[in-house]
Image: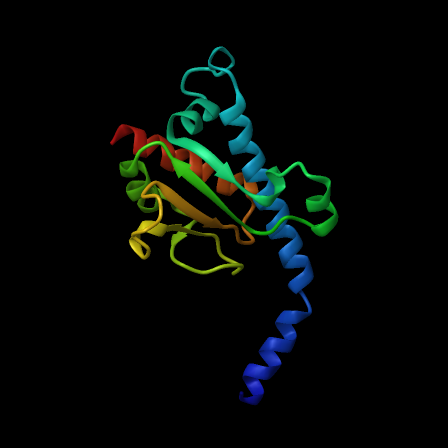
Length: 158
């Protein structure tokens, strides 16, 4: 490793904790929003609301923050990580959603400063064709939420 690369690595380590905490908090808030939308009963969801859009597109969301066991919270006292997955209701939705996003890049990586989304079946045909993996970056969580919702609206339109 060269001097410049070593210096850049050391410099990046100084802010690693703060970056991961923010990314983990943003991921947890996005997951909480999606999970909340999925838990709402049909009568409680206003037509064309953000929650209705999420409910129409997303079947499940998975993230460590959704586990209720106490040992999970003890094991992860500073956050539950930056990566979560969503399974969409149709394979067509999973193919299209990454292409409709503006803030998320369609790429495979974990824990970077930019938010990414990956259609897993593109590189692993053995997984559920409806599965998307999301890695949350440093962007504002509300901006990311807005981006996901607008992309889901586009996907529903076809």
